[in-house]
Image 1 (tube, rainbow, N blue to C red):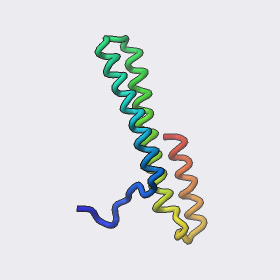
Image 2 (image 1 turned 60 degrees about the vertical axis):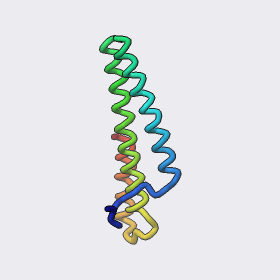
Image 3 (image 1 turned 180 degrees about the vertical axis):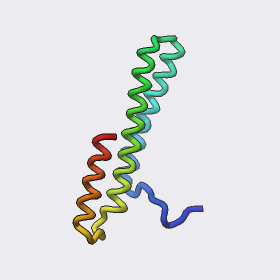
Image 4 (image 1 turned 180 degrees about the horizontal axis):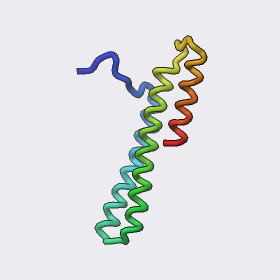
Length: 97
């Protein structure tokens, strides 16, 4: 049962971009599985695993940042100082995570 307090991806563009990003990650994972099946070197496999993990982390931070933007930085936010601080946090989140 869903409540009205749930945060969702509200933009069709956000949804489309996330689905595309996840499809690329899915391809990365498939390629890693194939590397393991071919018994490629541990170093090569771990490099690809690290890249896939980074891609998942980026998808996570983008999802959180866009949710903050949509739900916390709406035009209804009355406090300009709070809005500015939240926007800075979104930028930090997407840049460093």
